[in-house]
Image 1 (cartoon, rainbow, N blue to C red):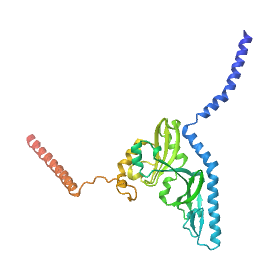
Image 2: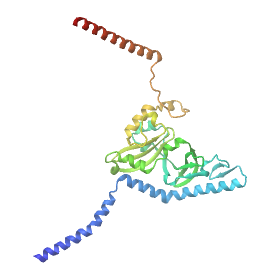
Image 3: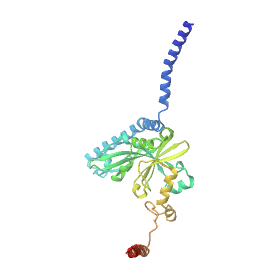
Image 4: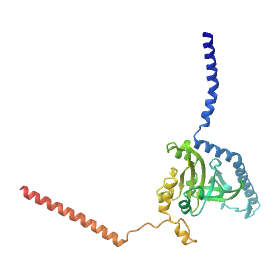
Length: 302
């Protein structure tokens, strides 16, 4: 009996010992959804796209140096006309390749599309770009832009200015935003970055359990009362953008330029004056009435 019990103890010990690695491996598979998505995104970027980006940037610099020495005023490089002077910041900049990210273009009439379909996925086009953060020798912040077609990249230009800093967000910014929402970090099952040039806003689009969430990074954040780097539901974004923008202006006038801000109701000056005077009169009357009532009470007490 004792021998049998001893044997069972030995078997249980080894069974437990062998099971531990399996438990640890299973735990690794349960890494939070957002962490896994960011890791997968970076792996694809590092293996598939960064070599192309580095090659294009290196080629641009080499050709710029070559035709500068030859005295040429311009040179066609990868389909882009480059100038010898500093008109093209890309050839004299510091690049942040770790901050490069892939972004999809959104349909122009974004709000109209979202209201009609109720799905952010339907507003995303197949036009893809890569944005690479840069800082010029003049210490200007900007982005180098490369277009993507069938997995191949092509340099298309640069955007320089303080406004571009809004779109230089990091993986940590995305992770921190998601962690602010209870249970979302584990539930997230897909992520994509998309941008609207009309609204100068880039969104991190997330899906989780058939629900859609958006993290906006917008130039107009202060104007439309949204917080950059915060998670919103799709319905919240639709409500906010529909409140401040009126795309019917663009539909009625195809040549309309700029973001179609909705005209907010303005109180006519004459009406505003009447309201102010009425309020002032009411306050004066109330004060006079109180003083008169106080005198009557004082008289009765005497």
